[in-house]
Amino acid sequence: MTVYLTGDTHGHFERVARFCEAYGLTSDDVVIILGDAGVNYFGEGSARDRASRALLGGLAPTFFCIHGNHEMRPQSLSCYREASWRGGTVFVEDAWPNLLFAKDGELFDFDGVRAFVVGGAYSIDKRTRLKAGLRWFSDEQPDEATKRLVEERLEEIGWDVDVMITHTCPFHLEPREVFVAGVDQSMVDTSTEKWLDDIERRLSYRQWYCGHFHTSKQVGSFRIMFEDWDVLWPHGGIPFDPARYGAATEPDRRTPAQLARDLDMDVDVVREALAETDGLHKDARGAEVCRETRVGTFIGRRFWERAHPEDFPYGQCESCRRWFMKRRLRIADIEGTPEEDQPLVCPDCHFGIGRHAN
Image (cartoon, rainbow, N blue to C red; front, side, top):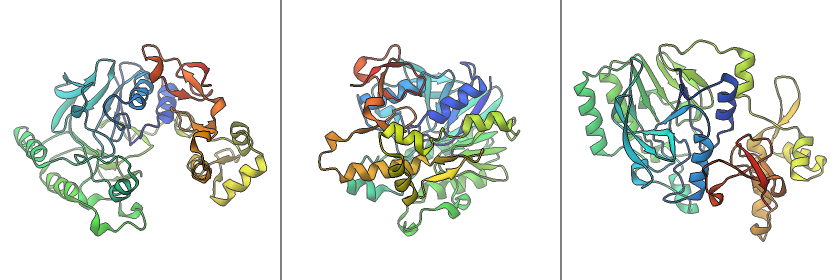
């Protein structure tokens, strides 16, 4: 068994699938997602959430997910039940037994490595979400009862662990250099981070991992992760083979010509739109490729400019989240998933391609 770690995925599993394929991960391996996996977002009975769980659960390894701030707590959803796993408590759905969600304040044993888990964080986009009618979760942070439980459990084990796994980080270790410009930090609730400050001062640990900040940073034995990967302490920090790791982690960028084909647009129009948003860059081989986030911005603008969104001709692959003409998307054929829950995927994704969506 090898235990890998990576940061927030927010329902975008292309890079996870590519890593699993490149490194030949099997059911014996474990991938720890450090919060905001993105499969418990839309709520009870959501077909979109079930489709996301099918995409992630269709991969070989066991996924051990920490609670983030942009998702529901699994214990609030009826599809999950409590189970014991590696000495701790997790929440699991019978349909996808390789998708596990850690209960806060639990100690897990990864072949002798004792890992303690605390999820949750504050959403700096809370006001924007509420104003726009987007989902925000009032229980995103650990409440006082959870904090007491965590401290009592740490007291029981003598405030000594091998690895601490959290979604956010202690206050004094926040990566302020990547804070979003324009956000009034005096309005941000940092109570969880300040509580973790107190925990960190009392705790004896060998390595601490967290996600949340959408950046990668190492400070001593403390590591913030996003789209990077590592192996769980004490085996981590060993450089991955550059060619293999690059193939597994470099996003699958399209050239302007490929994007024009997929969007059924003139390539000059695509180039002009991407240039306006700094949407092109050079890949490792010097080829000009698209920044997918900028492509999304470009498509999004076209969406909001339309008077009739139902006629919008573009759609996102529910696996890699890239944009395509709707006619290029297909309904997946994931075994054991009801037809109404099958996700729409692009021809490049390998979760089982079925018939055309329309």
